[in-house]
Amino acid sequence: MQALYGRVAIASRTIAPGEAASFELAQDQLLQIVTPSGRQVAELIGFRAGSPDERISPAATRTKNKSIMLELGKKLYSTRFQPLLEITADSVGRHDMLFSTTEPVKPTSHEQDGEEALTHQLVEALADYGVTLDAIAETVNFFANVSIKSKGELAIDESLAEANDSVTMKALADVVVAVGNRKGMAGTGIEATPLVVRVFR
Image (cartoon, rainbow, N blue to C red; front, side):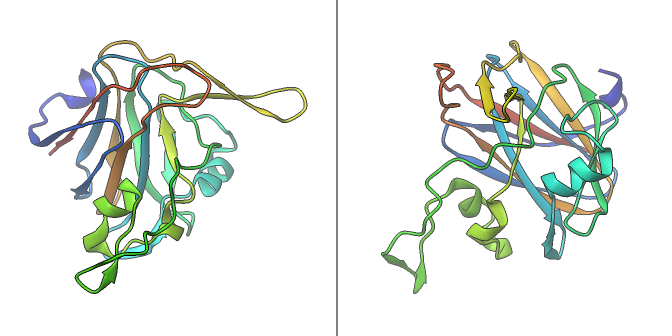
């Protein structure tokens, strides 16, 4: 793949359904998300390193790109309308910025080390960065196939991603991201499978 030419993998993680992992990217490093079996949806949230309040915003991304679609060359913008990631390779071309994150999104009632434990996998993956539930209300859902019907309803269809399809993004600043593996997209009947996430320098 041309986007990875001359690059060296410095991190790799297999993410099982219902789990998530965090990754630190320096500016110009690449993040690749692969669906080895196809059809699997990856949730992504992220923020500028050292500034969790400036996070990737689907709303700002739609506004700056003047589109609800994410395609090759499009950038993901922050809540301050600054570009944080750019799509440099994409073998699917169909992703979603309309659907919210998966549930559950409420904290549990028991205590862990004096602090309230959180149930959402994306929050757990970013626990060391002080990210809270409020930060993950909106995710970018790679490989998800969501469309708008004539009366404005959202239609969730089977992902168009086939085996070993992937999307690759370049960090436009130092960023921290978390990638979550959905257990499934409601209404599609697709059995959840693992994702592979790699970081390249």
